[in-house]
Image (tube, rainbow, N blue to C red; front, side, top):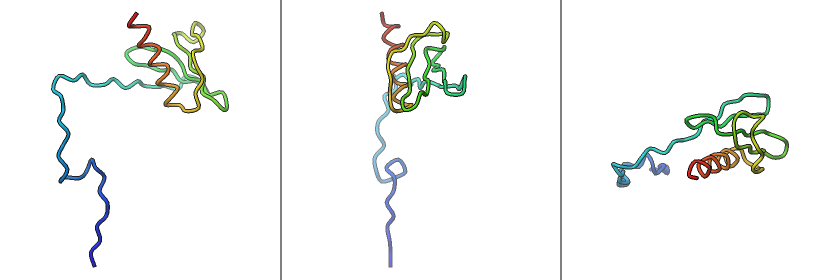
Length: 95
């Protein structure tokens, strides 16, 4: 009796590798650091905002330091909240 277990696509050696563009800049993933019991600072190259857990939502703040930041959105997921803060910061940098 032989059985074949499914293989995750990233480990499948028979599948051709996706081409990588040489000039593509690596995507900078934001870091989060816990600064208070329910508050996280969102950092790319410098602090850009905060995410605070206020049940049942995550409140997103743009700006630094915290006392000078402004509420920009509320989200139900932490990753979504971080993305909202990063998007707002990138929009402000583009202006």
